[in-house]
Length: 295
Ligand SMILES: Cc1cc2nc3c(=O)[nH]c(=O)nc-3n(C[C@H](O)[C@H](O)[C@H](O)COP(=O)(O)OP(=O)(O)OC[C@H]3O[C@@H](n4cnc5c(N)ncnc54)[C@H](O)[C@@H]3O)c2cc1C
Image (cartoon, rainbow, N blue to C red):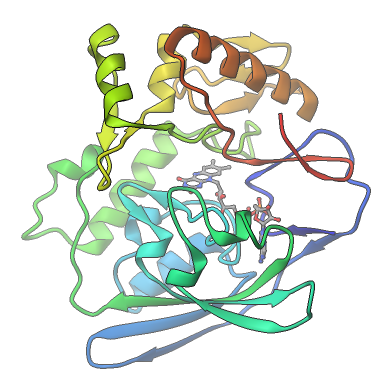
């Protein structure tokens, strides 16, 4: 059985032989205490609609994650994030159905083991949990997050959540190809995390390398930069291509099959490894006839 939300982070290499269950449950309830809003959302709600709903109700915090495609139930699976904010920042609880015991369970934020594009739902509970409801906890005392890209130009004293939302929407619409027009799953690779020593060695050889220091002292390398520097921006294998403007996004120019997209991904992984000795990991889940496969 394959659980399907909006399908925006899945690549099918062929028809799937099992049953596909599309989560389409709807509903939002709100509560609050002195310091926080608690927003409980059914898994089938659309993520971006939720961001808009919260803003309309003066509940701020999700604006940096505007326009991330897909459902609310999928958000904890890979701990979605954009423009310096990740889902786990506001996650209070995840309710899910355990498929091995048929129990409805609730995990706290800590129990979900969130990290960069990771959670327990991709590890120990992989294929064992159907997320049914997500509860977010958003502070009434809002703090803007302006660390990334064009948001850095905004004034933290005067900026509003709506201004951040508008800016994020505008930048995303101008930078990312619309999957309805040009098939894509957003970033095809995770930004690789390397140790401080590995980063220093890389920087000696490639002084302009783009990287972000992590709280644990490791470095997150910009995968798009690695692919671009490997000369692969715009590279095309049949109808599967590296996007002209966004090297991290692979696009279907017309009739590429899932298998051709994976061939292109394998080629990119090899070329980047040969140049930088860094292994790129795909971000989307690749689905073969019997479930998830490695590429
Ligand atoms: C143009 C574009 C831009 C993107 N930008 C970003 C970005 O900025 N940041 C980011 O983090 N991601 C981004 N993504 C990836 C994608 O939006 C997220 O991964 C999103 O959470 C996927 O939601 P979905 O409902 O489409 O999930 P699907 O693709 O349907 O499923 C993804 C995985 O989650 C599982 N799943 C889905 N729903 C449930 C559920 N209720 N219970 C258990 N498992 C479930 C599926 O089985 C599958 O393994 C982008 C994708 C695209 C196409």
